[in-house]
Image (cartoon, rainbow, N blue to C red; front, side, top):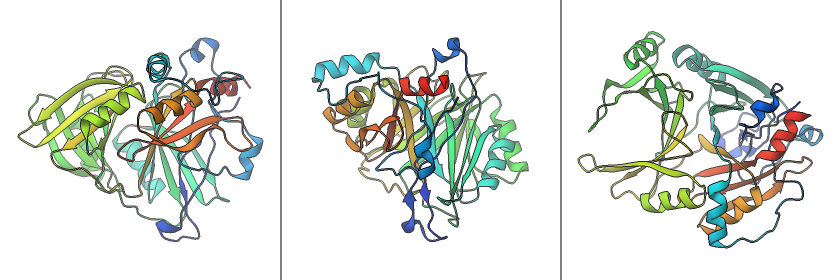
Amino acid sequence: MARLLLPLPFAAAAAASASSLHLAASRLRLPAVSVARREGLFGGRVVGGAVRAPARLARRGLCAGAEPGGSAGTAVSQDEAMEWVKKDRRRLLHVVYRVGDLDKTIKFYTECLGMKLLRKRDIPEERYTNAFLGYGPEDSHFIVELTYNYGVESYDIGTGFGHFGIAVEDVAKTVDLVKAKGGTVTREPGPVKGGKSVIAFIEDPDGYKFELIERGPTPEPLCQVMLRVGDLDRAINFYEKAFGMELLRKRDNPEYKYTIAMMGYGPEDKNAVLELTYNYGVKEYDKGNAYAQIAISTDDVYKTAEVIRLNGGKITREPGPLPGINTKITACTDPDGWKSVFVDNIDFLKELEE
């Protein structure tokens, strides 16, 4: 029984600079799951952009896909699109980003943040290595996928990416552990500005920021990805209509000149969410080359692509199976240029049954 996860890594060419990187694909196997558990699965792995699958993948399967004889090329009206999106089975699957020292980052995440190394895979012919980490099985949890490209020791995070959120039961205790392990604390534990929630900020070895949020036990400790946008109302409208997300809450902070909107597929205390941040007067951000994308599940990549187009998104990878693989995916960018990839649910379930 196999599950193929297709990341959006940049494969380094002969230890060169980031400009010499090219897109590559990768694969992950999952253990067998029962019929009962399959009912709740939405997962898969994907890539954004015009991804090239390595030759070795031509012999393997991938997760996700539309219904047999699905809706390729089926046009939908705006009303039909909105109705369908509301019924589509979606959840955040994973977030992909690049690191300069894989072993060092894995050590930090496992020892300081309590994550588990779920899978590690080296692809020497493509000159990259992946590591999948999280707080539970990949078929039911939001996870991180780290990509190390041979010879590339650092990346530009840019100004657009904000942080990842980690829910912990004791922020102060976690911060003490981070300090003991030599980690960087950029904001000491304390109430959030204008609120009561206790938070702290730390940085991992590559400079990615993590917000530690004090909460009780939660099924999804990896709970947030924060991205900055240039027009919050436009972004909210897009993620509601094109991605089928719900606006969970919105909070304006005029004293500090920013507004946030929490978007997701379920309550914040039980699901990973997308935190969109608008800083007054800032319309554009540098996205760098470190952060890659978020992957999301869907029942139909063809309809998903049409809905995205109808709502102002740009399709960067047309919906359909990857070359040599019966996997249906589609990739897009939102109005701010942030990448996402959608993976079809049915093909994923078929992979689990093989």
